[in-house]
Every structure is written in structure tokens, then in C-alpha cells.
Amino acid sequence: MAEVVLFHHLLGLTDGVLEFADGLRAGGHTVHTPDLFGGELPASLEEGSALAERLAPELRERDWSVYDGMVYAGISWGVMTAQRLAQTRPGARGALLYEACLPVSGEWAIGPWPEGLPVQVHGMDRDPFFAGEGDVDAARELPGELYLYDGDQHLFLDASLPSYDGLATGLVLSRSRAFIDSL
Image (cartoon, rainbow, N blue to C red; front, side, top):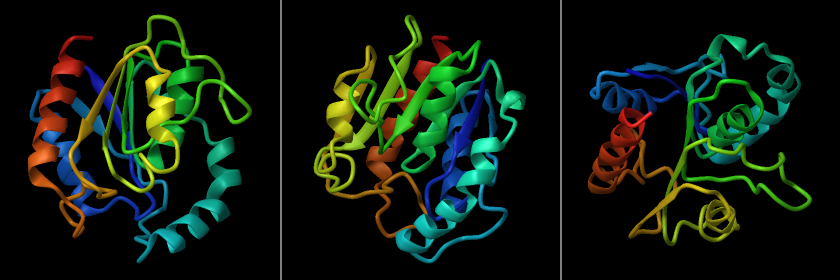
């Protein structure tokens, strides 16, 4: 079984993120869910963005070595950390990018995707952030699997939010567990 670290979105480590992590654990995997906001649960994406900006220097300097050799996963804002670690940490086993994807080429790129590193990207086909801001295009540059789900919701994986889509989340979890099982 694999070890996974799942980074939360801008609304913090919500009950819905923890429930999603439990869905990954149902495959017999160990899933770590670090709280990058120290228990704070912003009331809006704008508040979460402001908090993330205040914490950015601390997060950049953080020692991430405790997660070496794991599968890196992130939901929305958490993809920034997951993808950066997957692309830069030695021994990364894979990446699961949910509802966001950073470019691997061009001005804003972290750098090229590591050769042979497996990746899956999941998002809704009409999500104003994922589909509307170029993340889906970035995902198409990756040498992995891209799964698009019918819908226009962002944060559809979080059962504690009104944007939750249980049917799509079930498919995401099934595909994610199969991906982790294959590593």
C-alpha cells in the first residue's frame, strides 16, 4: 500500500476534505492530511486567499522532507503544494491533482514534468476556475490521465460544501484508488 499526502483547498482542512481522505484510505492506503492553516477555516475563497498569502513565506520555508517518497495530492489551492513537491522532491511516487493544475511550460511553470512520474488530474469541464482559467490546458500538457466530469462546480469533492457532487466524487475516488494501487 502507498502513502499519500493530501493538501487542502483555500477553505482549510474541512470535514469534507477529511471525508475525501477517508475515501482514499478505503483502498487500504495511508493518507496524511496536514493542516496548512493551523485550524483556521476561512468563510470564503477570498478570506482563504488572504490567509494563504499571509502564510506563504512560512510555507515556502517549511521542511517538507517528512513527506518524501509519497504520492502528492492536492485539492484546488492544495495542488500548488502537491504539484511543486511532486516535481521537485526526490522519490515522488505520483501526483493526484484535483480541480487545479499548474503549467509545466511557459513563464509560470515550475519546470518540466519529471520523466516517468505518474499523474492523474480531475476536474469539472465547466468549472470557472479549472476550465475557465487555463488549468485544464495545463493538465493536457502532462504525460498522464486527465478526467473531466460534467459540471460547473469548483470544490465538488468536499462533502461539507454546497458545491459537492457525490456522483462525480465517487468516480474520482474509484479512479484515484486504482491509480494509487498501480504504483
